Amino acid sequence: MEWKARGARGPHSLERAEESLDELGELAASAGAQIVGRVFQSRVAVEAATLVGQGKVEEIAAAVRAANVDTVIFDHDLTPTQQRNLERVIGSKVIDRTQLILDIFASRARTREGRLQVELAQLNYLLPRLTGRGAEMSRLGGGIGTRGPGETQLERDRRRIGRRIKKLEDELEGVRAGRALHRRRRRAVPLATLALAGYTNVGKSTLFNRLTRAGVLADSRMFATLDPTIRPLVLPSRRRVLVSDTVGFIRNLPTTLVKAFRATLEEVKEAALILHVVDVAAPSAPEHAAHVRRVLAEIGAAEIPQLLVLNKLDRLSEKERDCEAVRRRLLASEGCLSSAQVVAVSALTGAGIEQLLTQIDEMLQLDRIVRTTLRLPLSDAITLARLYEFGRVVAVRYGHQYCEVEVDIPESIRRQFLGAN
Image (cartoon, rainbow, N blue to C red; front, side, top):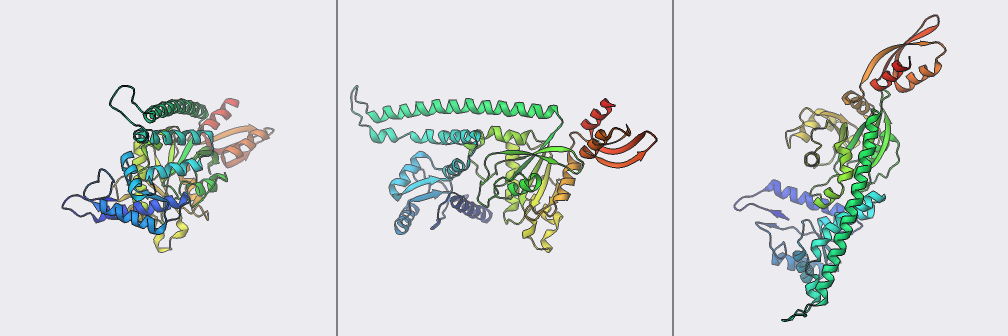
């Protein structure tokens, strides 16, 4: 649906609404649905009882009967009352965008943490929708003791769900505390974390696999990767960093999911550098990039340095591969991050990956690279081997009983070597 201002026309708004409906189709297909039709309505105001107008509801009902449809999905949040009214008239199951996303997340969660997060989001979504079920089951009279059993069951369900929500929140708080502990331990050893962030289905998992050889699922379906994964990566400077692959963002991401996935999103907040991955071949790439920046700002990660990674370079023609022109197109929508560093890559073919790693090396401030000259005994082959392993040896000069090694190494490794000598 598209809401238009009175007396005004909004072609860009209409375009965005059409794109959102296309995205809903992709989400439904990812959930295993077969799309048989779509309906669009532009209105000045929402219809309180059914969201869309009465004529449109009857049109949908006729289409459902003609195609023998079992589920109707609305690209807009429905109130419990609207959902019940629509189901009554249409005669088929009715769900909204939020419920569809929750169903996809429930089917993709694999770890215990992921399942806890999804269940919490589902229960928070379900709780207000219990209202009205008891009224349908009850028979209320005019005197004391005439309260029907349905409303009693409703209250019982509410209490049970409330207790379960509290238990899940406590368990997730434990997960959050555990993640915080892991982060403190990582900070004790100067090990930077890179967070991959971006719109869903931009190729983050493919890029993650290309960088770390992790072998995580890379699928064209939306939200194919749900549970976060962290793997080590060695940069050209021989610095060790950790790379975190996180859930993809999407427009109108349910607030219940943002709240439930707080522990996961904190990995992004604590990152030393965010790799903002964009599908450079997508027509809606500027809007997607702007949306990701808004979500990053909402979770308190707007001030973290970002490297814009233009992925799927292999889908562009040679003419379209002007990195600077693409950057201007992506950032023009909001006019921010105009000075952002940009690297164009193809995670599928490996093009541009070396340049990406070099750029990461230059942008990372934690455990900076310093050039150091160390004098080692000729017999100390172990230390020399470690210098080759953890740094980039520039020159080796041999003396009578020693060798001088000029090497670019991380500050933390330099301190270790100086302390040992």
